[in-house]
Image (tube, rainbow, N blue to C red; front, side, top):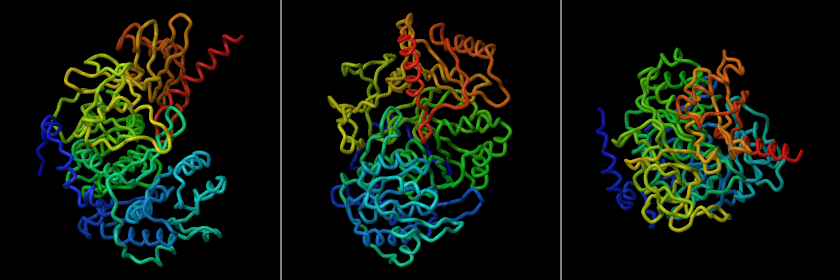
Length: 554
């Protein structure tokens, strides 16, 4: 039976922190445990996890299964001297053991630190140095990376489905330790300001910073799942984001379990074929992911999409702005509404085109502030700007009761000042209070006195039939300050040529304006990205600056 979509204005104005806290099992002041909220409080026979790997092996776990596994792992941690407030790092792919480690860590009152499996030793070392983790749980494939890390914590190694060689001397055997541990463990109760996660920023603009996530963030996570994702009891949910990153951990693990709903893990490489297969075979109706993944579905063409057309009730996109062309393609070939959502590791999601709240949705807009948040657009001197004036997206701290971020771990946070948290993203306010994304502050291009947002140029380019992906930057120019330069990845079947470059220039000039088209176009095989899939425009920009400076030196 379809649920009524609540009006946005009513939900936003009616948000009360006390009402939302009452939906939790515990109390932020009197004692709360994330494992209880995500596991213990739900019926033991209710399905919590549907897992499949690239070879077609499947496993289904109930909340009762997860409760027993989390208790065993909490006992394992206690035996290793890990207690409330200590950090446990986990470097595992999307497998059931990852869920066991996260829930068991929280059950023991400890802090969970995700490590993305594609990280190399240097990236891992930086994060472990930040967290001072007491234990790292990993698998045989990733274990050798720890050998290259100075003063690495003790390692505990899992056994993959295929079987593995004996655990090396000095390491702990996850399977043996779990088998010997009791499946009873009284959850360690904590307070709302105590940490449940220690995250790291994605490193889009510099070295990753540690982001402490307290237990009170559960309220914000829950609001996103209900208001923006609109996860309903009869949905089958899949968030394809990796739980080594914020969007995957917050909203593929914590979010669905927090409201007693099953989640889906697929442990395999991302392809259009595997994605459509999982959607069809698991009966997915509610899908979430990143624009990078959705653009690859489009690149595969409309024919593979026919098999699941009409099956997806809603699709949510986060990580980078959603190009309008993606929205149109999903409507035509999947008959699915795909909505853009905005957030950061530091905030969780906070500006969305909410599936669960009725409000106008305009392609290219990031949407409206999530209930529990008030957003503003600030000038460089800290004034709130009105509609159609580019400025920095900020969170009004005093009027955002759901905000949980208060500063980086062991690092100054200059983004918090004057009662606001500044996101570093350049946006414009629309007449109805919605937010339109322009780019990160450093990404905005200044050319002949015009301020040009790379997102608009990229969205125009991606409408062209030849374009798979693109990144637009400002290239230093003596006459214009900067010119617009586009790096372009072509779809299969198209070849780079000056004729195609000119066609793309004219296409953007026609779609946007005479000053915003790319005067230079570089055809490339791939774009530089963070491991989470965000395009690193600053690397392209820095390369152009270096070339410009080198040219002047000669």
